[in-house]
Amino acid sequence: MAFQQGLSGLNGASKAIDVISNNVANTSTIGFKSAQTKFNDVYAAALNGAAAGVQVGIGVNVGAVAQLFNQGNITPTGNPLDLAINGNGFFRVQQPGGTISYTRNGQFEIDKNGYIVNSAGYRLQGYPANSLGVILPATPTDIYLNTADLQPKQTESVKMGINLDSRQTVPTVPFTSTAAAPLPDPLSYNSSTSVSIFDSLGNSHIYTMYFVKSGGGTWDMHTSVDGAVTTGPTPLAFDSSGTLTTAMPIAMTATIAASFGAVSPISFDLDFTGTTQYGSAFGINRQVQDGYASGRLSGVTIAQDGTLQGRYSNGQSKILGQTVLASFANPNGLLSLGQNLWGESPESGQPLVGSPGSGSLGLVQAGAVEESNVDITAALVDLITQQRSYQANSQSIKTQDQILQTLVNLR
Image 1 (tube, helix red, strand yellow):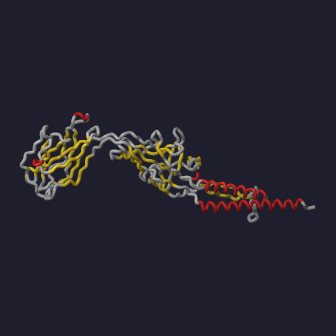
Image 2: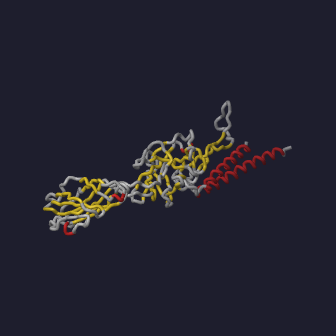
Image 3: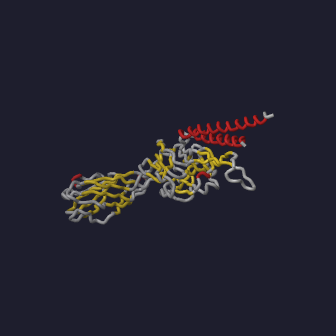
């Protein structure tokens, strides 16, 4: 039986060398998971059983080639679309019109159609976002980056926080503004400030506010748009502690020139909550408005939970989608498909799909990739070990051959 035993040993060592060599060859393959050969001893079966303690094995066979899904090192790349999984899970990708596959290789890019794809053209899948940037966690679909311009938003709210100097006196020059002289006399008001507001087409307009003290603790506000004739007055009032008592917000309108072609007048709420009248210089501590011009997509950032956020040239941002991860009860049951891809099988179980960081799923790190988890030093040592095993099994076959030759030579 030594021939059979030695031959099985040769086959086993050869298979192990194949596995180790494949590990070594993929040392630089992003997302690669090393494999390990598992051996089983072999004994002859007998119908009447076998006596314990006298059985002799008839060799070895390869029981399984198991992949090791331990974490690989995460290396920054600088490419914002490169993704590394820190923890459990696989990216879900799909060939256009094809089947679903899974990968740990997060080297992605945008194709000519606006989809996020890997080097083989498989599209990254995730949850889409609606027009308001709200994630819709339904069935995962191909992630599409809409490169259309972000539509402008008309100003609907302006929030101001200022301090009006209580030491100021009532101006002696009347506040006037006419078409011939739209800018009021600086002696006719105490302080002024401006804020940009946006019309329905995203055009920016300068909205100026002039503050005129009318008495102890009372002020009037006049306004103008783009230096045109001012409107007002709108009263403001403060109590003896300098706190604003006028109800907020104030409904305001701003008339713009017809040449802009936008909706006019612009209606918005002006909120002075937090404005004070203290004995200190005029100052602005808050100025916020919610309108903006149109913008073009200038970049994409991806958060740890897989959320894709588009950055636009107008300074705005918008949620564009969210990548998902999938986990399996038995990752070793996955089918290796090549190109850093795995496929679902009955042995792997069905995938559990969710957003990164949910359940047992890991997080994603943008601008980085997960390196191969092959330990090259250990692989080379294992290669030497299997080489010695191959040589030893060859020697057992040689020894059996010599024994048989001795028997043949008997006379």
